[in-house]
Image (cartoon, rainbow, N blue to C red; front, side, top):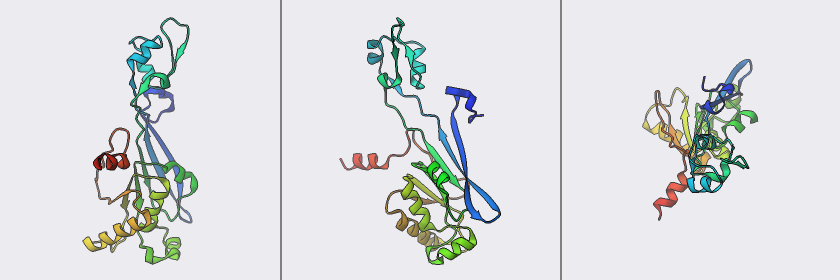
Length: 211
């Protein structure tokens, strides 16, 4: 399994879960899938200067493992020779809930994509959140903003959420809570979101577009 802790450097994914607060007596969970940090690129000149010529040792260095130099007189660390290091991508999925407890919220921090329900509207009020065990789009947007999530995909819409105008209202409410911190979209069955290597970096894209 990709989440097997015994795989070492062959482990591809880290899958974690924590409990959500839905309704009394009804247990629901959130899940986070994060990839193993992708291998960086070896700066050959630096590696050779430190005494490591091209060999299988480069593969170990790329995976974050220190190696002895070729004459055995010292050790070379990945931080000394790696460049173009990529951030691991992270995906979070929250099931039905009225509140995200701190352990689950911490797992979601800096997710590239977080899937969050938007069953209710902000005008339904706090009491309805408590009794129904569901959240609204405004709080979904605020959650993504507070946790630094790059993309917020809304799902689990209420039974009246049909038609372009109603979906527009839901997205608008989420954007009000998010204050422009995330890209926000309405999810649908079998939807696919491609996350580039190194994760989303909309600030970088925006700065390059403005030049």
